[in-house]
Image (tube, rainbow, N blue to C red; front, side):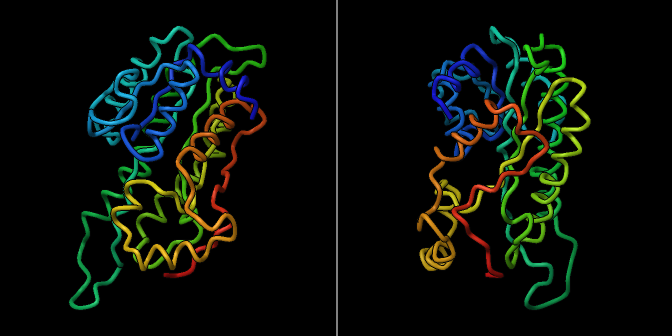
Length: 258
């Protein structure tokens, strides 16, 4: 992507990022700010991200009204709300059946599905509702929504039933949402990252597990840099022919069972 294209798309535009206080979302926020965009971060914490240049809304994506309020705040930018990026998510590893004892209902399964899938849907719907009021550009576009799926959507590992289901749901809603919103001039794209060096990955995955995972990468033989994810978000915002698609960003990895 030509840097000048990113500047022209993002400068003066309102950008709403869920989960923007850390990890992939924070990197997207930094990129947007560096290109003159106006960032609103919706996160359960008010710390992190480009704190001096961004508005922060402390809240949970599971609440639609919170998402809508954040979208309206982001729309106060000179060019209105033009980009929504859904990065809020959790992993919550847990097996279907415990090694000992009987299977029981799991609150953590429900929590993963609610945050990753319902939360993404809430942000998408709230952002689209606000974007629909924008003045269209010459192609009739009013905005872009970029969702975060995962390679686990199709290659879930042991202990990732809930996470895989939630990310498969995000990938599955992408084309349907793009079709729903086409007459409003709103594109919907998903990115399915593989292994990225986020704080969650660095802190929660042991050295032995990291070596096993990273050995499955084709090239480059390293986790992705969050900046590489952010640049794909910017590209999706720029290239209007990207719509209804889930883009793998994974260094060629195909995850084994464990």
